[in-house]
Every structure is written in structure tokens, then in C-alpha cells.
Length: 94
Image (cartoon, rainbow, N blue to C red; front, side, top):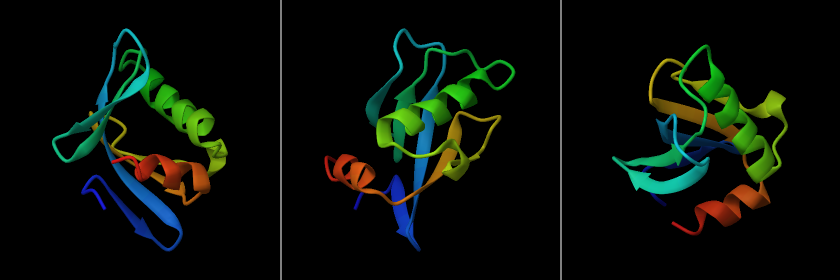
């Protein structure tokens, strides 16, 4: 298991490094013991946070109501999501 995530009671806690104002929204890879995600949105008025939540919704088929975001005013964030098969498949690639 990589150091950027941990599993607790059917929840996955993922440490994220956000790169706002990117040319494309995508997972970049590991960076400083975190998962680096580039986001097209700027870090203004919560736009990047909303895009990050939407990214997890679509990529891993998780309802918005089940995604928790910590570190809203920082590039270093934690996303807490329910454990599901798409997420397991993704995490196994690291």
C-alpha cells in the first residue's frame, strides 16, 4: 500500500496535492507522498475544490454526498471516499 492513502472502516483517505490552473484535469502521479491531481479551475472561490469533488464523482462513480474534502484552502488536501471497486482498481495501479 502506498503512503498517500489508507483504508479505515470501508472508507479510503487519500492525501492529495492539487495543482490548480492546469491545462488539463488529470491525475499526474505521486508527489511528496501524495497523489498529485492537476485541475483546470483556478483556486478562487472554491472552484478548484468543486472541480476536485466532481472529478472523484465521475472517475470513481461516487455520489457527491459521500465525498468529504479536508484542507479546502490548501494545495494539500485529504479526500475521504467510500471504498468501491473502481477505487480499488485505481489504487492497485500504484
